[in-house]
Length: 258
Image 1: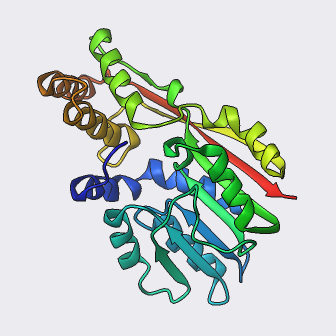
Image 2 (image 1 turned 30 degrees about the vertical axis):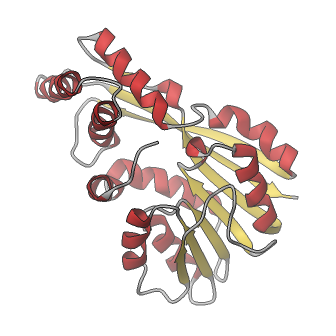
């Protein structure tokens, strides 16, 4: 799994406020169908951007509980949400939530389930903490949908195979309908949305992944640093030549506790 240390957190802070990730976050936000007074659990809250947006929407009568196992992510989340008395940022795992049964109206989990070892347990936990009629919204990556142009297909293959080690499940959406229904959810839905770029923007998902994938492959011994640096430099050069192409599909998933 990717380590969210201070360097990674700084990179993500820039990308998460960019257009691409803002759109991804907005997809989850809209699907929650928030109302004033809602109690919401933001699982894997990261740096707290979605947490803050939810807090504004539920108002002073609502409550948002941001949950994340990484102190490097909870620290900026706590700082960002410090002006909201209705927000609580706490340590916790998706498959063992530090919440009471039926405590919340809505649960959000954006790019979380793909990293969880026991996805059925995490879905079961979301079901447990939700009130009857509560809504569970998740967004995860379609890891097998990545299409990234390169002049060196063998090196690109090795970069992708290295990146495969950083998540636990590449096809969360394919399992979502069965696992949510087995957990007791109804009104199960899955909707794809795709990012396709022919430019390399500093705030984009492609630029973020370029940094994260090259670093992960080298630091975890999957590739030599010289190879990942060459891949990185090639993508920068392709962008300068107006030959850059990147496409990746995410999935917005939702379900209701019966």
